[in-house]
Image 1 (cartoon, rainbow, N blue to C red):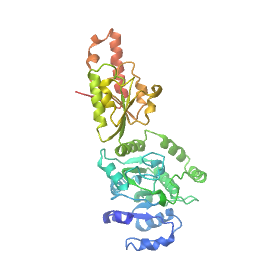
Image 2 (spheres, rainbow, N blue to C red):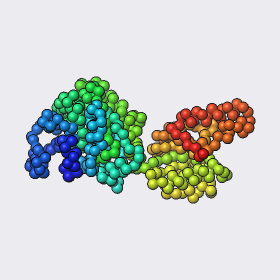
Image 3 (cartoon, rainbow, N blue to C red):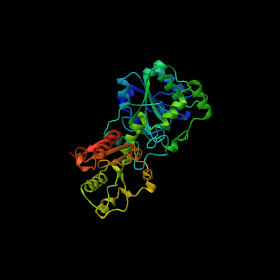
Image 4 (cartoon, rainbow, N blue to C red):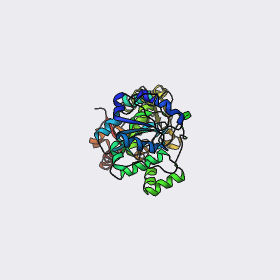
Length: 391
């Protein structure tokens, strides 16, 4: 299947290295045609070294059975052609250790419900923004692309005693990093690693021996990887977030503290905003944090299928679960807990419906109150990730 998915032009630009566990399958590979050659080696690392010594091209290394979408290497090859400092390109996959998708650091047995490698890749590529070259700590996953320039500069891939390719490639990437190379991930391409075909468990982690081997060779390596795994602000964490939202939709939390007994312009604008978001196909859920019972004028909107409106448990916004965007759809006023809402989602957005009170001190009992209001609004705008206006 991999052979059928690769175009002639791509095969001319890159050699595909497939590590095979069973010798009896070599004849099956050989029967695919003159472009396919086989050899007996002791490990996938050794196979890569042999192929590169003969061909001197980029290598796409298949270390575990996986299903690939059409044109899997198109983006990777364009990046490698643009910059010789790129050492490898990895891809999103259900089981790729810390690069796993849709949950980082948590390999899964299958793709998200309703998707496979083709539909996921199509969605990742068709929705904006177009993914850029995103750096990662090292190459990982069932299939990785190694650049010819890095292979030439760094030297042979060295395997640990366990012969595990994922450990060997981590070592290779660190050695490349020491020479100024950068490892990338293509978050527009998804590979499906079927759990029933996996040679290694999809939840395989570093053994003490392998971790010790890496630590002995690169003292800072393990600590760096552990730090990047937990970081929510690393380049990969941000790119992964965008990819996940493309596939699973946005999860938005709206500040509904304006919903009291009376309905004026702010409540009208907020209910219309909630409805528009709930009807948007790219939005998965709209949560609304209420101050009390649902008022009659908002009952219909807040009962829509995608809307989860309630008073947060003990006032804790984290009770709404993972949130992509925390949104206050009207201007903040002194007393609003900006730090609490800043921590409620990955991003914080506020709306400024008007600046009447900002410019007119007549709305306040004293000059001090007016200055405090102005200062607070300025502080909130600095704190948030985006501010929207209606005019």
